[in-house]
Length: 186
Image 1 (spheres, rainbow, N blue to C red):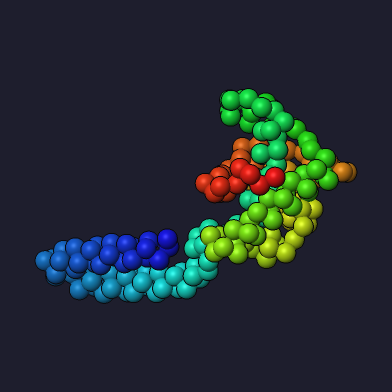
Image 2 (spheres, one colour; image 1 turned 30 degrees about the vertical axis):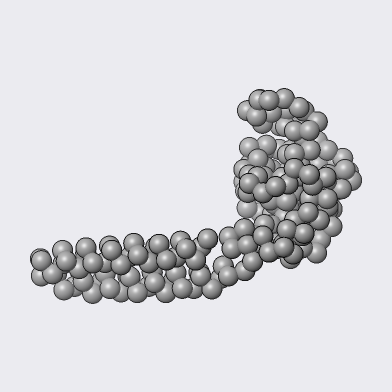
């Protein structure tokens, strides 16, 4: 997907360059033309570098511990608090909810096993911590990364339970996996 985006962006860059060059020549702006050429060269190099970075299986479908933990936890809570209203669920049911650590670990482990199958089939790519980790390891990593990257941690561990502190953030991370066929994962 990113390779196609790169080609589309290249076409856009070429079109923009030609328009700017025509305008610069019409006004006699040689300095502007040199700046545009340098900017376009740097953009083209960035596109090439990014294309090399994203040549892994699955293209831009790379999943991290935060995605896996969020999907498993939200889906488990949705199962427990069945109801059609997503907003009520996020506002009331999920906020402050908790799950036993061993149950959450088992759900994450089942999901990770399904994702590993998808990776072997070439549909997605997993970070090493998901590829080789068990459910509890993935959860521990996710708790750590949620705490590092966000002012308010989405989940926290207290004793042998996981508590949901920011259901909206957790749901945001969950959505990264939402478009994949994961209904029968556990």
